[in-house]
Image 1 (tube, rainbow, N blue to C red):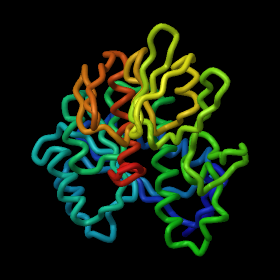
Image 2 (cartoon, one colour):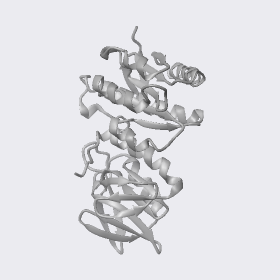
Image 3 (cartoon, rainbow, N blue to C red):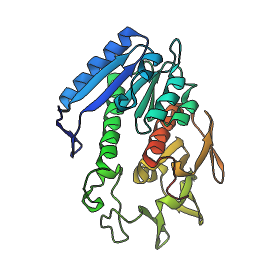
Image 4 (tube, helix red, strand yellow):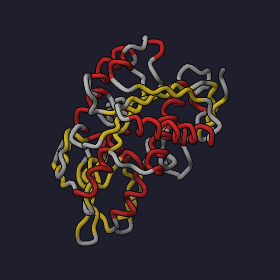
Length: 288
């Protein structure tokens, strides 16, 4: 039976298959209860399945592979990473959320195009946030087969954190987002995709762009609020454009032109946002 799904205004007539794979019975039952509650509150029709091993999950035929999967990494037999690699052969579009007590597997998660990485223990707020984002991603994927034209889509359907504006300040879904930088009596329009990273010192913001550096008096907090989900503040003094990230560690982010510091307390948030960025763009930077 199919029902209409309303996710942030998007109308989808689909039944979402959600699977939980974990060798801990208590965790599977807890996730099932909370996912069912979230689906009911959202007025969605979800089929929820659970598996206690990678082998049992892999026994599913390709047409029954779940739309959304919560997958433990540390399991007897085939672990979560091995299971995910084999599942990807059956379904490239499956939305994969790893659930684990260890954070060191986060780099391997990119190899199987993981949507998110939940580190145990996590609270309800975090779980529901990740689940809702996964369902939004599912809605966008199923939208591809609709007859809806791109001009009818809203900014929220494009996962834009802020409206795109033209030079005259009017909303536009086709123009690149930009900011106005005031220096002296002049205002300069800077396209966000052209900004590699920004840093702040002595009350000045320095924008490192593909066309050179731009310096102005301002606050990095205000710039961060303008730039949206494609940028992340890795350190109190640095804001990076995720499209230019080449590699990273717990204390450093390497961009195409420079390396910038990573604050320890910002690392987990950076990994989450970068994985969402990779999922949203299929690994292709807008400016490359």
